[in-house]
Length: 91
Image 1 (spheres, rainbow, N blue to C red):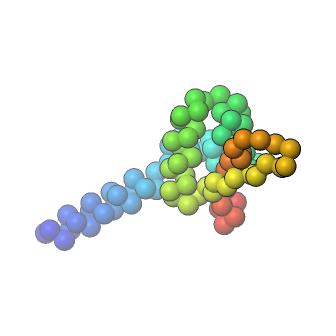
Image 2: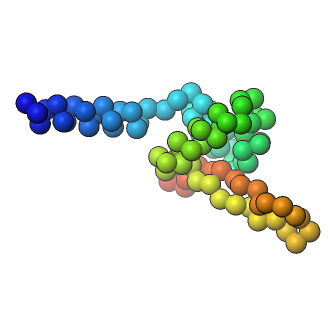
Image 3: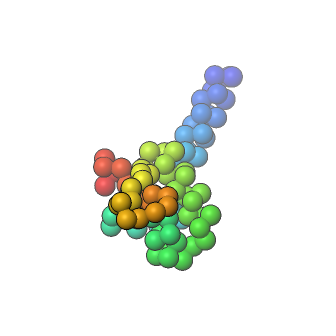
């Protein structure tokens, strides 16, 4: 009996990993258009920055979205912009 309960709990864990929130769905739809920064996503979706960040973090953990820096040119200063894009095999 215990083996059945272990299988059920692992199935529930798998379902939690596969479930996607509405914000994550919106992020995936918008990112299909091309790579965007977090600020661009905030403006496009009209959602708070922290909500965008949480959604992106979950998508990165699930290997659906990739984060990479866009290095500045010689004339620019400051931190590099960070772009988010859908992984190639997910497009």
